[in-house]
Image 1 (cartoon, rainbow, N blue to C red):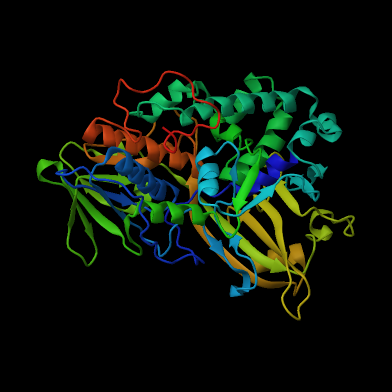
Image 2 (image 1 turned 180 degrees about the vertical axis):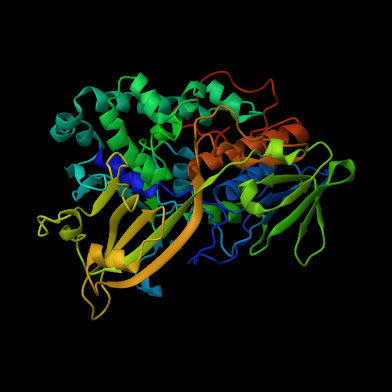
Length: 521
């Protein structure tokens, strides 16, 4: 259980187009797959808007299709930031190259994230794995710690005596079973299949519709999970992952928050996966380039306009960023933007990274009557108490050592509001913080119960990856959603998908567990 909660701390930010200082603002190179384009084929031009997990993987899937189908597909990516990676962004404390980078955004992937796992393996990237850390974790309700856990990994925490003493045997084991069933259903998304025309169809095929239709708290109660377990332990995960409480977030995403078994990250930043996808794709990439206008003209061609440049014309456009955040004006005869892109609100999150000489948060803040008490280095929160906590999560990360300076600890804090310098002083002590980096962004969508979603294909030639976000919002699911829209685009153009299957050719047999559709065919 502790591994679930610790890993949850790292999965939390799902951001596209966030402006942040980055250590990876180099322009991707040109390293395409070798392929033989069939003689006499017309060029098919695709524009991708966004270079995060969704856009970079879409370019990669298109390059795979080009190689397999032998078609003349050219891809251009437009990204408003000066870096590739979107949600996965690193910063370097003190801007000191001797200090390892720290993830400002999405920090981990898990074993069930087959596209990320496969990419890391294929690209031979170094991996950091998380599991049996021994530091203490506390769940804070604004007044007191309702639970303190020490050491051990996923399996031991599901069966720890302290957990059972507070919540009983039934609730932890029932949640584990529900999460396992959810993950097993989700894994069907890596099997060969015709592209889905809507997120509602995907949800129905996985038997998730009734789960997204209700709040996490209601669904768990209906399945025999105690309100205490739900509003303390599950809510700690939903607050750190999505900044939302169990009464507000739909049940599917609530369980996704708990599915953090086998957590890993790429040494130096997960952005390297997205950078490699773009490099491997051979796509032409325009960084610091904001698309302002999309207009569908004659013969269904898309005219794309950016500030200070002539219009470019494309056969298809993949929108791989939240529509609202792009600010793009889209014009097409049969397109009603309000219907195709229903409003999706985002959680405005404050991220505070700092370096402190204080090894633990001060006990005087959490234990005023016993200030010498050692506070845990990992603190999650629940809104179940009478006072709303001032933060969503606080976690200690790397220990650093600068030359001639005492040891310091990198701390990451997520909060709904800006935490003041005075508050940080109460938490860590006067004069103990040597470096601080603040960032606020629209981190992830608000995920209320729903059975309706944005359109995957708003109109002919326009495909929307982020229609998937109100369903499940993670780095990995954006790569799954991008494969679906690329498959749909290819079927519309060539009558075949990424693997070359025609509609009647998709295999019926279940592929083995290590099969990953898109990578394997």
